Amino acid sequence: MTTTIETAFDAPLAEPHLRQQLLVLYLSSSALTSTVVGWTRYDGTGASNPTMGDSDEPPYDTGVEALVDGWRLLQMSQLQPHPRGEEYDTGYLPFEFLFERIVSIS
Amino acid sequence: MTASPSTGRVDRKHLMTSVEMAHFVSHGSFRLDGVVPESMNERAIDVLDAGIEPHPYGTPVEDAYPQGSFVRELLDLPAVAGALQSLVGPRPAVDHHAVHVRPPHGGSAQDMHGDAVLDTRTDAFDVQLMYYPREVTLEQGGTLSVPGTHLRRINEGAIGRYQNLRGQTRLTCPAGTVVFLHHGIWHGGRRNDSGQPRYMFKIRFNPTVRQLRLWNTDDIDDPQVRATLATRFPWADGSQGRLELINRAKLWRVLTGDHDFDLDYYLTRERIRPTTLAPGATDPRLGAGGAGDGWGA
Image 1 (cartoon, rainbow over the protein chains, first blue to last red):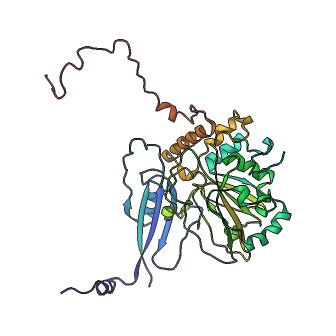
Image 2: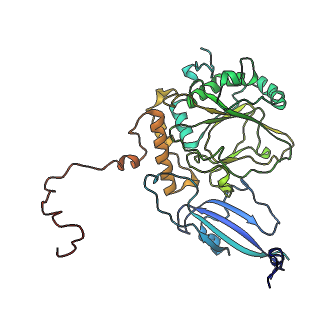
């Protein structure tokens, strides 16, 4: 017998004292050792509220520095082929790396 | 000669130089610090508080802001009229305008964005005039923008995930400053943490003529033009920076009509596709077998 979606998703957290913090780093190439050119943070603890323009200096100089500091890499952007005729077009930042760390709020 | 954006009769000495235009092409902005006299800045607050009537998209300047109005007076200032004519030409159309007032300790930071929508134009651009009648301090949270991002094609708020980029700047300026921005530049308003309201009046202009050599080109051969066009920004390190140079060179070709202009050798190299056969390169045996004959055919 199944329950409602609302009930199922209202189940207690297995580790209620833990929350996720996210760090998005934009690097200058696909190499995790390359320079950080952009950065974004989201705080699942609710203790802080990072926003646009909140810092001029990145928290790390390279992606690897974040690993060394304990961040876990969740995802990196794929290298996409360049459609013919659009090779020089630019848009969104291409080298995005998503990290997490789990912290205690207790 | 009278400076007037509606008639296009701006004295050449008030037009932008080639170096200044190169700055606009590389950075996506051009600023005139304290160019508006204090007597006008004092009057501006009441004018902006009262609001400025909207009008349909594409309205000519002379209809949107009649002679004698405050905004017309602002646009007729020689340096302002000269920059406007240099960027979008005489008799530009008014796209829209807006008065932005951030109350003391008010508002929250906007997400980073580009204005309007994904713009497909590579052979024309709009400019946004930003007028700050009062001094803008860091505490007042002036507009954050990222120099050099204006040629990247993104769709408005889709870049909201980008909180900080190396090389971003927060506008601080003296009272009476006018800034012209390329429509595509990445930016966002910041929270006002001061006890003073922050005033800004914005007008977006569309060109009504081809944007070809509209500025004072007397210094077109100044080495500083090329150096300014080749400015590198820390958010576009490495290969991304090279693409920026290519797109700036393309825009400079549009603005100057010089279709051979290049930065480094990128656009020139891609045209090297010789069609002349080298002597001795014709061997009648080649191509004698059918496709797919494979080895030993």
